[in-house]
Length: 121
Picture 1 (cartoon, rainbow, N blue to C red):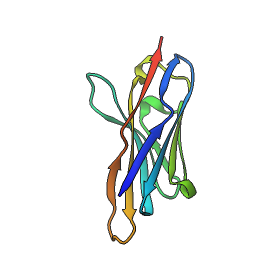
Picture 2 (tube, rainbow, N blue to C red):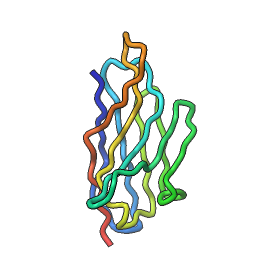
Picture 3 (cartoon, rainbow, N blue to C red):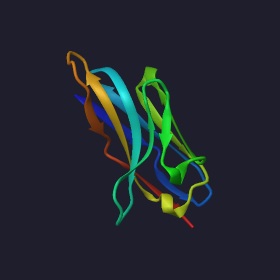
């Protein structure tokens, strides 16, 4: 069984910073792409940033230049450094990863439980 556990959310003032972490645990053989999504009230869930196994990254236009996604493959962990936060960044942030479990030959998509980020004006 594979689990993704996020941490690092909280309340911050506009202009502030937060760092989210997501650790994958369990019987893991390898991890392909890892990503952060967010879901704000009244809006659809959207992808924030993606990083593949080689370290290549992509960002939503709304966070480019402010957010940075990174990963530590040795720790099976993905991070999201969020700077210059705005009230519109308020959402539940979810970790997502394509994981190949041990003794299997395919990748399965997993989600974390979500962590709340609230940015006050």
